[in-house]
Length: 101
Image 1 (cartoon, rainbow, N blue to C red):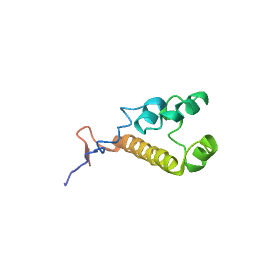
Image 2: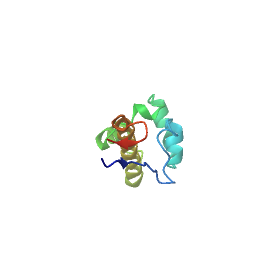
Image 3: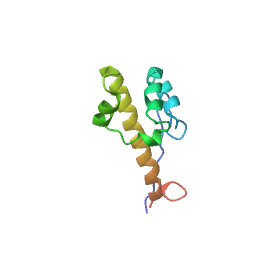
Image 4: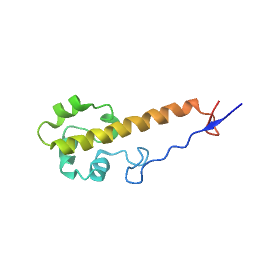
């Protein structure tokens, strides 16, 4: 039987979701500190509260407070977070050694 081993590697410039969970740290890492007050004032303090946001949700929430480039950075980061969460949840498919059987 052939075993396939999976290794998940993050880009060095992109923090792992398990390392960054606060909105403040997330926005700081994206160099969007000016948006911290908007998120905090709306009651969002943890990435788990917004990780499901899509482009429509973000437009409704942020409005005209970000440039197009900033919106793309936010959405790209949220996409990475969603992908990482999917990988984390899919680890239940792996055995304790990290092999798919």
